[in-house]
Length: 146
Length: 146
DNA sequence: GTGATTGCAAATCTTTTGCACTAAA
DNA sequence: TTTAGTGCAAAAGATTTGCAATCAC
Image (cartoon, rainbow over all chains, first blue to last red; front, side, top):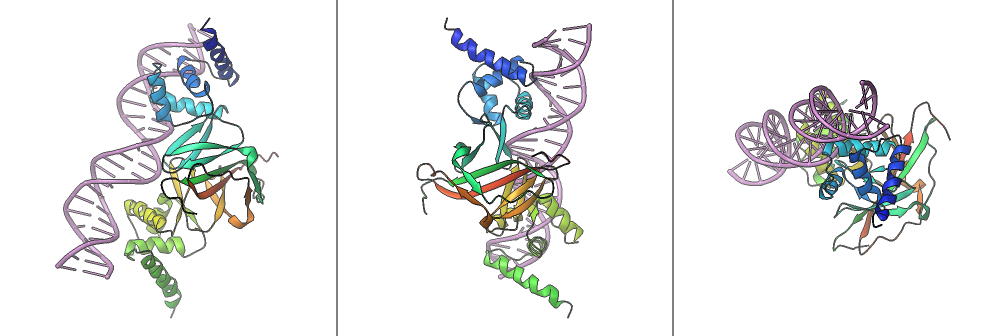
């Protein structure tokens, strides 16, 4: 009985991977469950690696990286770049933007519908706009000058 | 005589460095001249290193990195992050945004005044907005689907 | 069984750092 | 002279890759 509450998301995740053309291997499942079982998240490869470690479903760091890239290519994740040297992967693939808390290095989602951008220039040549990324950098700390 | 046309920007750059509290050393001058003599530019450390090399005013790569960071701290440059693993430094420190050409890895400026962002949410807590970065990612190539 | 996937360790790439040497004020 | 700045080589950190072993179908 109590297993049912676990089985359902498990199945959904299996299907989610299969729909993306990815075999639901143990490692991919372990990662996907940590990533997708809860709400929207922003994780780094190292973070995710620690989490599956803690969850006793260890996956090598190399596989974590490879899997994050595969998931991203498959549209299951979105890569968010806020600083050179470290990538965040966002489980929210809907249209949205981000607050970046410089102090803590944390990311917070901003609903895409709440922001309107006007005056977007035409893309040069025959290039097409793939995505508009807005990052609002916050200087957190005691300092709150206008 | 023909030297005059070179002397003027040279002096301006010396002053620019001094105003920033940086000694106008040979290396910093070599880098500053390449960076600031022309119009707005976006360079990586490696690129800049190659350029001073080509200009026969070699500067070690370590110094290029250190100098780019110093210039950025001094407000002479702005760091633009469009992809993990590589930083671009922008000589345009005015309010503006960027096109990012995924294919070529190139950046193009978008005047900040031309874009209006509405519906910006309040920053959480007592945090202050430090900057709003907008990157328009372009999928360039033969593909130009709407 | 057969091709996809994984883990490990090594390799890569970008950026930073320690330290002896050199140059600017 | 005295301190800041530079170059080199090594270190550090993130990510990728080659390849033999393992797993999913």
